[in-house]
Image 1: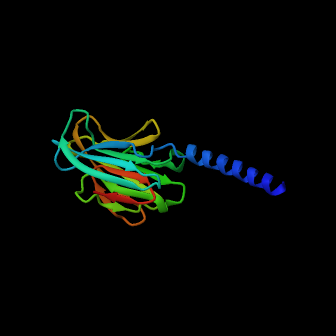
Image 2: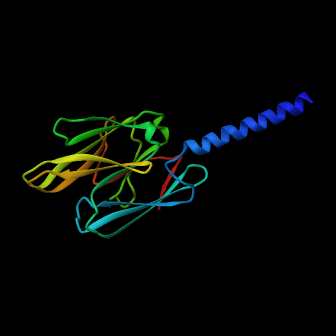
Image 3: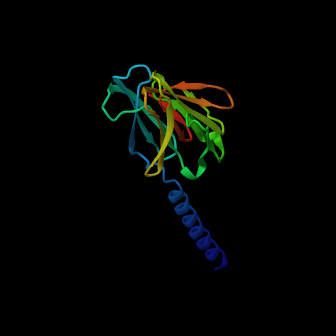
Amino acid sequence: MKNRMLFVCCGILCLVLHSFSCYSQDYYEVGKEYTLRSLHQEMSQVTSVLTVRWDEGGAVRIARSEEASQAQDQRMLHVLAPLDEIAIASTNSAGEIAELEIREDTAQYWLISMDAPGGVQYKPGDKIEVSCHCNRGDGGCDVAFMKQRNNLNATCVPRPGCQDCKMVVTVIKSGQRISGGAVVLKASRVEVE
């Protein structure tokens, strides 16, 4: 009887723990395709499109394509990760540079280029810098963050006098850089098609 009761209690505990683990991950749905867009860094008439899909094991498959730009397209940094693990650590006084900090174990975090044909991938470490610089005109640019549902995005906003901003995403520990849009995501493994 004691063994049976212990077995039932262990079974209930496993179900409760499993339900907590299912609900703690709220930044993606298994099998759902997420389409991410970012205006190409070098060709303003082209938008880079990544289709991201997680499997049951937390691995990600990414398909990359390009299409004609639409009026609302901007250079973007997309963050697909638990927002309680990510913080905007600092922004310089001019607003042109912002730092994102990953507060949890960084082993499952990836930084992926939107524009690179092979989807350049870096392990971001615990800090990533996003900087925006005026590419055309006299004004500067600001880094702006937006929370949409369970995701965080950053873009460059031109100040008066600037017609176009460039985005650079830098891994602070290694100095590795991505010019243009990028994706920071949490996954057990990443495969770019």
